[in-house]
Image (cartoon, rainbow, N blue to C red; front, top):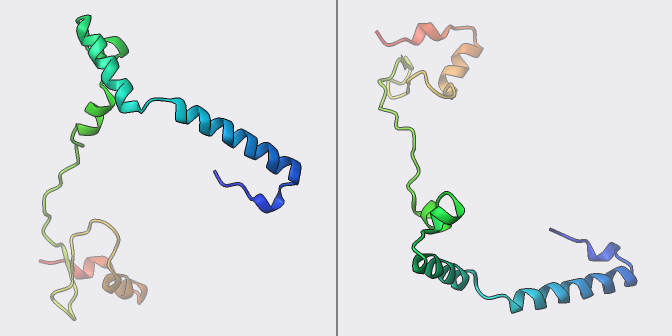
Length: 116
Protein backbone atom coordinates (compact mmCIF):
# COMPACT_ATOMS: atom_id res chain seq x y z
CA UNK A 1 0.00 0.00 0.00
CA UNK A 2 1.49 3.27 -1.06
CA UNK A 3 0.09 6.62 0.02
CA UNK A 4 1.20 9.83 -1.67
CA UNK A 5 1.78 12.06 1.34
CA UNK A 6 2.24 15.15 -0.84
CA UNK A 7 -1.42 15.14 -1.84
CA UNK A 8 -2.81 14.93 1.72
CA UNK A 9 -3.99 17.95 3.65
CA UNK A 10 -2.79 18.68 7.18
CA UNK A 11 -6.03 17.28 8.63
CA UNK A 12 -5.73 14.07 6.57
CA UNK A 13 -2.08 13.66 7.58
CA UNK A 14 -2.97 14.04 11.26
CA UNK A 15 -5.73 11.44 10.90
CA UNK A 16 -3.34 9.06 9.15
CA UNK A 17 -0.72 9.48 11.87
CA UNK A 18 -3.29 8.80 14.58
CA UNK A 19 -4.52 5.63 12.86
CA UNK A 20 -0.94 4.45 12.30
CA UNK A 21 -0.07 4.93 15.99
CA UNK A 22 -3.16 2.99 17.08
CA UNK A 23 -2.29 0.15 14.73
CA UNK A 24 1.32 0.14 15.94
CA UNK A 25 0.30 -0.16 19.61
CA UNK A 26 -2.16 -2.95 18.74
CA UNK A 27 0.55 -4.90 16.95
CA UNK A 28 3.06 -4.30 19.74
CA UNK A 29 0.68 -5.83 22.30
CA UNK A 30 0.24 -9.04 20.33
CA UNK A 31 2.44 -12.03 21.06
CA UNK A 32 4.58 -13.44 18.25
CA UNK A 33 2.69 -15.89 16.05
CA UNK A 34 5.15 -18.71 16.75
CA UNK A 35 4.41 -18.45 20.47
CA UNK A 36 0.68 -18.62 19.88
CA UNK A 37 1.06 -21.59 17.52
CA UNK A 38 3.12 -23.48 20.10
CA UNK A 39 0.51 -22.82 22.79
CA UNK A 40 -2.32 -24.00 20.55
CA UNK A 41 -0.45 -27.13 19.53
CA UNK A 42 0.40 -27.93 23.16
CA UNK A 43 -3.21 -27.39 24.26
CA UNK A 44 -4.53 -29.59 21.44
CA UNK A 45 -2.01 -32.31 22.26
CA UNK A 46 -2.92 -32.17 25.94
CA UNK A 47 -6.57 -32.78 25.00
CA UNK A 48 -5.65 -35.61 22.60
CA UNK A 49 -6.19 -33.80 19.31
CA UNK A 50 -4.03 -32.63 16.46
CA UNK A 51 -4.18 -29.20 14.84
CA UNK A 52 -5.34 -30.84 11.60
CA UNK A 53 -8.27 -32.49 13.42
CA UNK A 54 -9.32 -29.24 15.04
CA UNK A 55 -8.96 -26.87 12.10
CA UNK A 56 -9.17 -29.25 9.15
CA UNK A 57 -6.30 -29.58 6.73
CA UNK A 58 -2.63 -29.16 7.23
CA UNK A 59 -0.84 -26.78 9.53
CA UNK A 60 1.01 -23.83 7.94
CA UNK A 61 4.34 -25.44 8.79
CA UNK A 62 3.35 -28.69 7.08
CA UNK A 63 2.23 -26.85 3.97
CA UNK A 64 5.56 -25.06 3.70
CA UNK A 65 7.51 -28.29 4.14
CA UNK A 66 5.53 -30.26 1.55
CA UNK A 67 7.54 -30.74 -1.64
CA UNK A 68 6.09 -29.30 -4.81
CA UNK A 69 5.22 -31.73 -7.53
CA UNK A 70 6.68 -30.65 -10.81
CA UNK A 71 5.94 -32.03 -14.20
CA UNK A 72 8.93 -34.04 -15.31
CA UNK A 73 9.55 -34.10 -19.00
CA UNK A 74 12.11 -36.25 -20.68
CA UNK A 75 14.73 -35.03 -23.07
CA UNK A 76 13.53 -34.85 -26.66
CA UNK A 77 15.66 -35.46 -29.72
CA UNK A 78 15.97 -32.50 -32.09
CA UNK A 79 13.68 -32.54 -35.14
CA UNK A 80 15.00 -29.54 -37.05
CA UNK A 81 18.55 -28.51 -37.98
CA UNK A 82 20.05 -25.33 -39.44
CA UNK A 83 21.80 -26.20 -42.73
CA UNK A 84 24.25 -23.32 -42.31
CA UNK A 85 25.27 -24.30 -38.77
CA UNK A 86 24.72 -27.92 -37.69
CA UNK A 87 24.92 -26.96 -33.99
CA UNK A 88 21.64 -25.04 -34.29
CA UNK A 89 18.84 -27.52 -33.67
CA UNK A 90 15.27 -27.35 -32.42
CA UNK A 91 13.05 -30.05 -30.92
CA UNK A 92 9.85 -28.47 -32.15
CA UNK A 93 8.81 -27.54 -28.63
CA UNK A 94 8.58 -24.04 -27.26
CA UNK A 95 9.22 -20.84 -29.12
CA UNK A 96 10.69 -21.14 -32.59
CA UNK A 97 14.42 -20.27 -32.55
CA UNK A 98 15.67 -17.12 -34.27
CA UNK A 99 17.59 -18.94 -36.98
CA UNK A 100 14.47 -20.82 -38.05
CA UNK A 101 12.25 -17.75 -37.78
CA UNK A 102 14.66 -15.90 -40.10
CA UNK A 103 14.42 -18.67 -42.70
CA UNK A 104 10.62 -18.84 -42.51
CA UNK A 105 10.38 -15.06 -42.82
CA UNK A 106 12.23 -15.37 -46.14
CA UNK A 107 9.56 -17.79 -47.39
CA UNK A 108 11.00 -21.21 -46.60
CA UNK A 109 8.92 -23.86 -44.85
CA UNK A 110 9.68 -25.38 -41.46
CA UNK A 111 9.45 -28.85 -43.01
CA UNK A 112 12.52 -28.03 -45.14
CA UNK A 113 14.67 -28.25 -42.01
CA UNK A 114 13.49 -31.62 -40.71
CA UNK A 115 16.25 -33.99 -39.70
CA UNK A 116 16.00 -37.20 -41.71
